[in-house]
Image 1 (tube, rainbow, N blue to C red):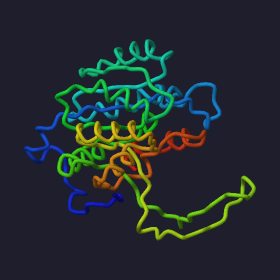
Image 2 (tube, one colour):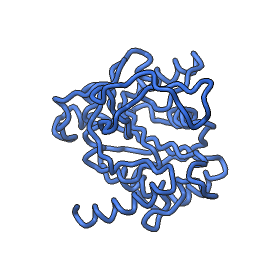
Image 3 (cartoon, one colour):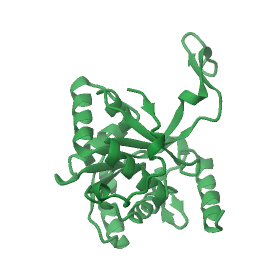
Length: 259
């Protein structure tokens, strides 16, 4: 099913309804990537932002949301022990499990999903390298998922979007096959929040069918469930390339200046 925006719930704030307060939320952070596009020796989740590894900076942002009861971080096997110690030093006051990630994001989230407590109602998945997410954004996505079972952050596409094919063409050349109206396109962000049972079913079906997707919403969509989009922000960027870290530092300065 396609993603769509549930406009009536955009401005709904978490904590305003008794139903929201009854939902137990577990946050998953996939953090096992190598970050090859950064061109650095250190995986991007461990690069420094404001004096702290990006992953810990992101974890602090999520922990600022009282709706999240606990956390599961999936990282590379060789980083588990180091990360366990680093997380303990954060003294977040809530349980944080560190588990081994997989070869892909989907594998990492699946491993973390197996560690989610059975009493969890909603599972929130957030990129470990999206450090500038705000409490307001987190709460709005949780509230939407509490009401509609599945919700993500996303921003409208500002550029013209082209569908292309590259067969029989040089690597740096593509042939346009269609122009997609911008009003039909959003750029997906995280957090992505789902009913725990729904996300578990989506992952189980994907494993059974040998299907992979670039985000959790894609797996939920393929089993025929609607996913709502809550409007996010350009500042909730994913650190992928070297310039992204500089941009994150700029946005952080702007945020602290109240801009």
